[in-house]
Image 1: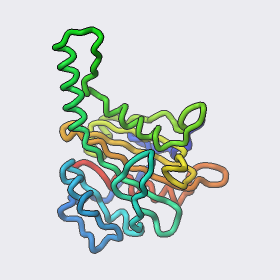
Image 2: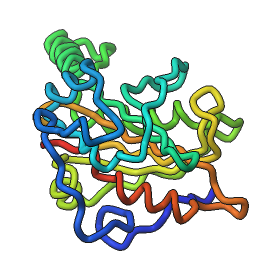
Image 3: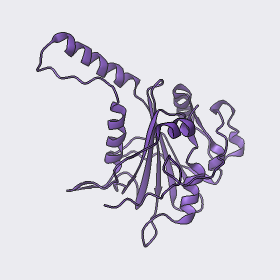
Image 4: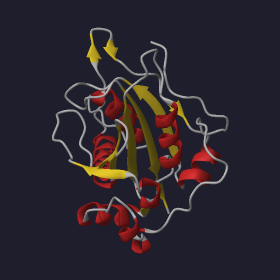
Amino acid sequence: MQSRIPTRRDAIGWVTASVCAPVIGLGTVPFAAAAVSVPSGFRKTLEHARMALDTSTLQDFDPARVLPNPDFEYDLAVKHAGSKFEIRYAVQDLGPIQKEMDKKSQEAEADGDPQTVAVPFGDSYTTFAETAVMNMSLKTPQGPVMSPPNEFNPDSVRNEFGADWGFNCWFQPSPTFANYTDGIAVAIYRDDVRTLAFMVYLYQAKEQGGMADDDHALLERTFYALRFE
């Protein structure tokens, strides 16, 4: 299936303004000036992951209820006040998983039993990220409806998101995950904090397919709202 991800003219994969709004550390976010405030639990998650959320890009968004679903757990959701456009944020600490995987790998190596198979953490975060998008996608007999993940250029993802790795991916949302025709998932990972973060953009495609110009402008404006410090 052909991807409907909008094109971008730089190394990271999207069309963005040449000057982005500065990202403000969570300790100094002017919440009174923004439409969206960060719940205390998610604030602590961001601080632990050394991440920042620039709420100044979300001033015409309203908080949305985080919906329980069987596909993908997320921490914060916001909806645009003037169009059917939603962003869902999720931040996952992979540190405990990394320790458990590496421990089992070391035990298997020490055991010396060729029947014992254990994989070290390594770059498992790439598998975790792709699996997450598969889970939130519509399932068909041919597989989940999603485009192949498009990995970001390492230098660009470091400069623009403060991350070591990342990708974007178009998908058709599962009806148990979201009531939208289309979604774009952006995943970024930073190794020193063992954190995998997601920005999931949900929207209604135009009748002829693709993203409406107004929604594309919202995507551009909010694309760097969440990043590593």
